[in-house]
Image (cartoon, rainbow, N blue to C red):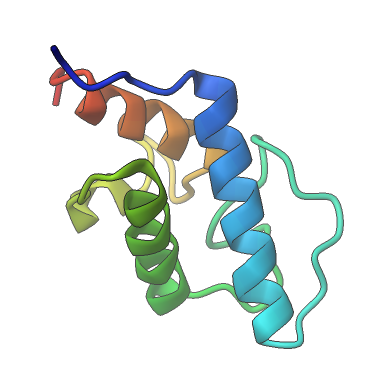
Length: 97
């Protein structure tokens, strides 16, 4: 019996909860986060180390490890949104990447 892949909504919720935890622990605001929020340019004070922390924490929640390549900017842009990261995580869990 295979592992159950979470829904996109569950992955988004996990990402939002984790960003909220990281921001709260750092004493930074957590206003207006949603799936279109840019990881590097839309979250106050969020940097590449925070993004790695996010990936590790979400991986632990979802029972998987994710490569840091999932954090690369979206093709043709200099940004990565929480929604795009959720899609990449789902593709990884489904064995597509």
